[in-house]
Image (tube, rainbow, N blue to C red):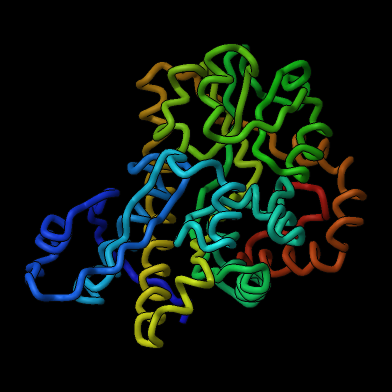
Length: 353
């Protein structure tokens, strides 16, 4: 049930009227037909982002496959609040659906914070293999026990560092930089070990914090740096790829329980397609986004000694092992290595060699 397939995205923005939404997929509105059920879908990034493109696929698939009985309203750009607020609303049934990135998942399921450990994975392909396997499935099932239903693992992407002060080539270059982080205590521990001055700031406030000088730096996937236009307020990009950030498509238990068994399968299949789209957008951004950011004036540091960064982060390894257990961390690392036979086993707290 959690396999992925390819899909060409189509846009269904929030607030579409029935005629516009259904005409786009070739379904007419009949005067005496029952009104479609409208479900709200929120996320923090723009419609052009990896999350936005995924939502568009989900909306188009659900509307097409249900014959217009369900329409998904698109609420991007934190219109419905930050991610922790949206998680709470999904649990309460005040919000139907959300595409939530990995950083705040530990507030919902503390064990999910393990994915925020820097240099846990070598690259996105390795991480995807783990999340698509038994470990990823087990975490979806655990999320299902938190008061909502997790439909699929999507993707926010590999995170990289940007800043407005100086090129960052080594961990020492982070000293004194005021770095914004998402609401993740694991990421905070990792970057504290790297020597940065960290501050947790919700995503809706990041651009203004960078523009005002409240913080000097942030870290996000290439697709997010582009879609959020951080290049307007940041000068340097360092391709650290320090954390793979997944994302989860979740639905409220009330909304999911109201679906027929057939419609539940439609929603699950649409979520898999949306998740695949978010991954495809990230893959394309990693291929072409650096060139685009250079064209917009960013100075890109492409050659990075990741081992030096990972070795510095290893100072936080005892805390990570205490919080998540060495066994879980080792199982994830071993699954990652198994997914990439050419990759040597990476000790806990250390990055790729």
